[in-house]
Length: 234
Image (cartoon, rainbow, N blue to C red; front, side, top):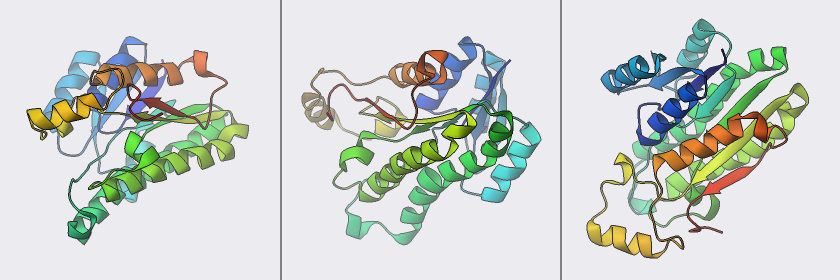
């Protein structure tokens, strides 16, 4: 049975990905930092395993991956955001965004790669954002971190392709998750009006994209950014 590690696996998108991978036959390791109860409940439901570590702590990441063993599929999904003027975001918040969204992605990839390279097989899928593609006012730090994920995806894909490892990225649009529950009904209407398909994305849409990139159907795809945004960014 193939193994998958999904960071931030208990969140809206993460949970959908974990459930889809389990349905596709993966044994899923569900990473969490704060959502212990939810992660363990999900692990019980899909016969996976909840694993606790802070992805921004490189030593913890390496120790945990060493304990788990070989990972066939890594999905770097964990992320945080802040909405405020760039000049109002304090250093602590900036470091948290960059440490989790970008550094955490690098940490996890670096930890799983030695085993993948040794086996000449592996798959890494990074979750970025449409704001990493075009930038968002009042989410400058977040946009920068997600743009970094896109650059990382392209560079790493070139480096590890000779070892039979594929690296791709999904750039979600506006997905209805707890992260977006802060928006008012008026805000949501304005956002929906900007989406050509006229509907908000669901976590399932990202899980479907991840399942495709993880499958043999995508065996000739690497270094690509799959935009799942209803046409909001083209």
